[in-house]
Length: 527
Image (cartoon, rainbow, N blue to C red; front, side, top):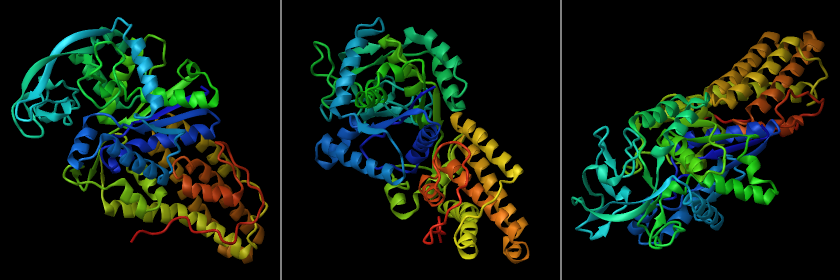
């Protein structure tokens, strides 16, 4: 599969990113770096979601325009992702003219299908505020699980809702009970696609378990048709006569950002879009579990209804939640660790390491400063950093900073060769925690090998043995740096430069060369 599309979820540009966002999105960068090292043609795309009610609410609160809010946070997102080493091929935004043009043309084609219907529906109205309310401005009780919810989606059970189904619906701004009038909208008839969506679910063995369970539940409970237009003034205009005062509903345009961003890259590179969304491709979608239905039901439904044979998602990399000191992260209560603060104060690889090694891959995980410190100090500094430093420091001090000539120990060569195959397979299946743990098993082996062979003693007692030990340790470090590059790109790049390596996902040979006299310690302890 020569074409690898990796779509990272598009964060709402109405507030800062927190650690939950980073934990959910980081797997996308690991995949992109790995597949590039394998020689694949990678399209790693994402962007800021600049439309929708949350942004207009924030704009009203601050008495500025929605454009000003979305641009402010879009710039902040770009800075955070750059500091963390996210290697997007294109990070864009839904307010980009190229996205708007693509979505407009997609919807024109969509409206010609048998899966679009015009319907008169209930529309929430607040008599106190004297205005029509979007779903997100409706609050009440979830009709499925009974938890407090907004009118668009229940955070407790993940159910995607319509405002008129919310029990005891009230205005989110003033708390007044709502009345409902009528309006006409375009609907995507997802219910007609049930068989196709069931078949789609059954042929994807590498979806995360939560994605399979959530999607099966949605299908079993009965798929509901969804409005794809809304009475809004902030968003992409509906390309249909009679809908001039409406906008495309955000869920029916933001997931198309994966396609619009890919189309932009294809145009820039002179590649046919059909190649990337055709048979010779593999598509990964990376997000938190709240976004599962948008990637396993809604995006496939839009692609199927579009009826142009566009490739459906292959791999769903859907993370669980990150809690903070045992409590659910809440931006409204300011109970969060903000990504921009974390990146300003800590090594990016320390952050990346923690959110893979302690990431919410299969279950909710907790962030605590104590655990963050201990992971850094014991594993990055104490194991990996120590192995690199003790080896290179010895070469510089006792071997005239020249890597000695030697032969690779057969057992070590076999371990390294096996690691590339095994770790690569785990990355491709979305098992990042297991992949990283396997690499660190090799790190621990390297430290044991160094200790067992005692180069500080053989330096005078058996110089050839000393040189052989240091050669094999350097060989291990070289290959560990390449294996770790998708996970820890900043520190790995230093070693790759020091040892004259490539990032290619293959066994690296050691070239006898001098270690730079000014090489630095990779990681610092967190006190």
